[in-house]
Length: 315
Image 1: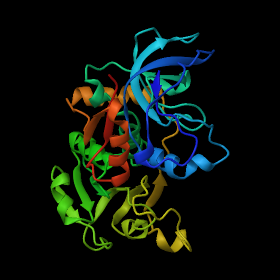
Image 2: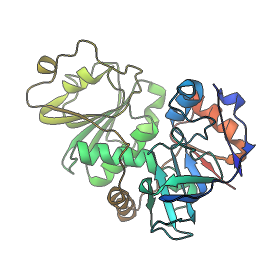
Image 3: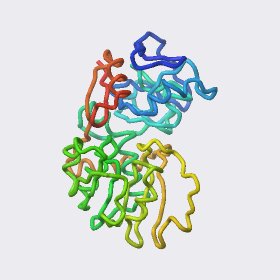
């Protein structure tokens, strides 16, 4: 089968399609014929840095998510031809991921779906919409009467969160640090330039923090009493908080939580697709590449010039 397989630092310009064997099925795992997959910055990190780590199986097929059909259900309850999505659980790190025509995946991280959306739309869902859904509902307990701040909204996750929150009925304030990107978040109720200081300018009940540790102190000061901040993203490039004093820096009555997307469930996947169907939402993506142009897709990912999710469709 055709696949991308790497065993060393691989800049986007060096990504190439090769031939490797179709995986052999084994108990508890299913063989998925990949129809499309979304791309993620974690795959860029794998190619450019993490591939050196001892815990990465080498050679490895990257890709932490995909959509497709069951080619061989092995001894699981799946049926051949069943439409599924898959994400996380070690994909593209502990075992081969989705940058291939077929993927052998553990059944506990493969989920049946009922949708008539085209494959490229479905490919925008797994990691991005699962993360948005978990952040908004599991962590923020989002309600229709909430005012939601999405800090760092001009990314695939931000666009998905705006779409979901607006469909729910929330007021959404979305931020970007670039004036040129304001049109990309125009479907929010307010599109705001983030100069690093929003405290005193906005007051909200819920906040989805996608910039990360770089701005979280300021975001905490934007909350009303009883408000919740969910730290999900790391767009600011700062990963830890040095000298953070929770007692002094989390305002009284404000709550701070975070979302980690490594634990998807069939129930959550069902809820996401039911919501998409009920509200007639089409998952948004920035650009779609054919698999034969995976090199160009990786270049686009690394450049950061695509506004939204990059998806790749198989022939």
